[in-house]
Length: 435
Image 1 (cartoon, one colour):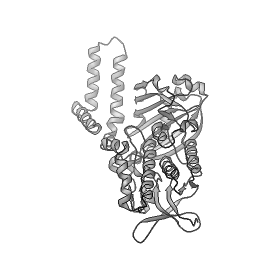
Image 2 (cartoon, helix red, strand yellow):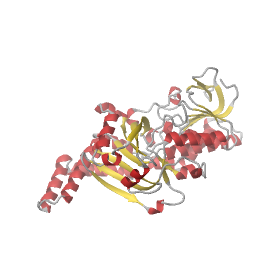
Image 3 (cartoon, one colour):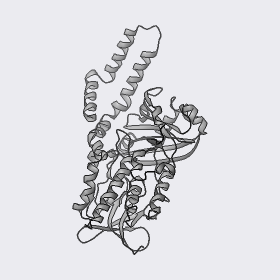
Image 4 (tube, helix red, strand yellow):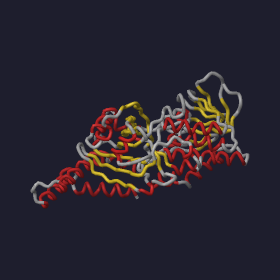
């Protein structure tokens, strides 16, 4: 297929793959990038939030050219029952700064732009190309890949696996385990198009200001999952995701849950009259720190979603992927600049650098949270949202009933639904996982 040997081959052109490819190519390395999609971003779905700090470390002036939608000035959190939501929101005028901290993006557009920056640095990109096999020498060192195109294998000093959570290259070679259904979420998303002025009116924003809403509760029917709404310039991204294991156990349809979320009284007015032009589904790693595979070996490193680098607690994925790709590229360049071989011992530098970053520190801090969210899903996403909604209704409804009777009714509902000891136990477990 390609006779020349490369310094590095990057599998995937998502956030992690593009960050790794750009980092290495900008330092003069010869990099080949393989993407199975029609173009970078064609298989990605995201709400989508871009974290500026992580991009700045790679392309400092990205705001001048990158396809950004809106800079976020407000975050809303909703705990939802079937007919109501109890929420909190944080809005800060300081986020109307010259250099925004978070932006909404459309992944298909941003990934193509990011990939173009890499190609301008010298990366060779092959799309609609699937790497089907890792090539190893007699000593077990990865020395290249074989693709679904005609021709022989392609050789490189090191291979970066940024193939996503459901990529098969690393699992086939037994370099990382196949993610379990309880460690992966299936998210579905739609793009609802509306005039910019309508979006700004409905979300109380102006210009390029944006709002994000994250929702949990009965919308997931007792499964561990979240809904999201993001404002773009002329569209609204709306979606919902739950663990694959829960979908299988409950025989629920992601599309049906999304339809119910869209029809909720708190959501329907926000998207009323919109035109739906896109529907997509995507797998997201949810296993957290305890699900991270070995991140390096003889001739390879793993980063991004393929490495289970997703912070489910703070709903952060793209920034972890991008940071891991950048650090992988920096570690590989350091090894090459010393003219050292790409052995497992030398590539352990990547793991050390990642351990020193916020990526592993944050995931380690919340390492028990994914298991708690899964095992207590029925309480956290069904029982408690209903109880909170009932308590708030009792608090705000004025109908001549003495307040002491309403308080007794509220506490009685909590005891019947869960019991005082059960509530206390859940609170303790949640606090321990959050510590």
